[in-house]
Amino acid sequence: MVNWRVGSLISYLFSFLTPYFKVMDTAENREKLKTAQINNALGLFIFVFGIIVVFAMIFANTFIQKMTDLAAGLSLVLIGGGMMLKSRKTIKRLK
Image (tube, rainbow, N blue to C red; front, side):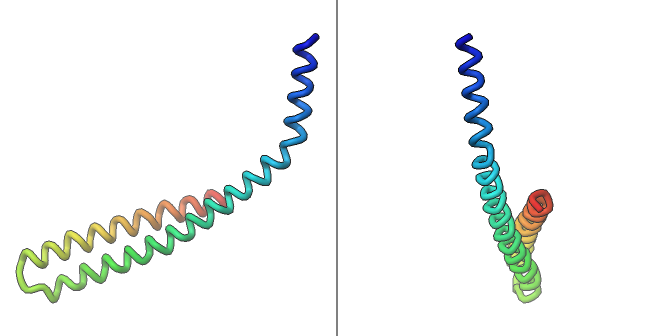
């Protein structure tokens, strides 16, 4: 008989607190959405900066400078592109 009372008390408290969990869940989703949008903008910046670095390879004098610019530019393009893809996937999932 004691277990029944404890169980009904827990179910009553859970039903009472459920709206608060839903509000917190939407607040967390809004926070994740905002973070994903910021990461999308940051990824775009890094991507464009990587393209500029690859384009700057034209103005390098030696082979080592050209390869350094190419490696750095492609690394930035991959990082920025990955950030954009992941953040867009998160934005689609949350909306």
